[in-house]
Image (cartoon, rainbow, N blue to C red; front, side):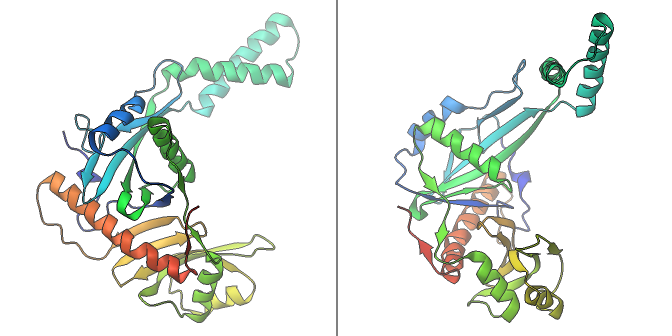
Length: 308
């Protein structure tokens, strides 16, 4: 039944590699079985016919499990996204054939509007034959911390996840965390002065951008305390993404919108061989780590603004 343990490395107790963070704007009304029943309204169904995509809930524990898994005060969820992708080359080949047949039959050239209509018809025709591409998106709700955390590097996927929750529950008000000062100002200052708040240290990557010209530099696996980095900043670039270490244990890259990427813990205390026990331990480690880290991060950025 269980098939999620393979999604994380036991050498890295963080269940998620990425995290889009949201604050719950009000208390979660449903828990346990009532919540699971509400999610059934959007249970995942595979793509069929000309339906090009599907998004819905599946079990965090595998195909036969419940739609929610509660552990350590958190509610673990798993969404599945499936899309039928038709190769552009296949569309173009069939489209050219249709255009040539029409041109020969009618003895005239087709205008751009007619070609666009043929392209749309061709895409619809090919969708049923396309192989589906599928992925799973994990997330958890931590009511005590008023947090929704979604494991994705894509803002669009995080919105799909939230929209699915809203469709299932009728209402699910969440907002991205807001801080009092501009994150990029702090990131830039940290690189310039090499002075960070307590418990924070520079990682080994950053993105720099010139706000006037748009010129950008991406630094990877690099000492961020070097003169080279400061030269870019003194030339007018700002830092839009920065890698940091927290307490010497957590490594994470943070962007200008406070999305977290490349989450990694330096140590692991998970020794249980049971896959569900491993999952439970990883959920607890992840939720407790973020519950401690986020307030310190927000404080370093001027403090969090409470959601209205």
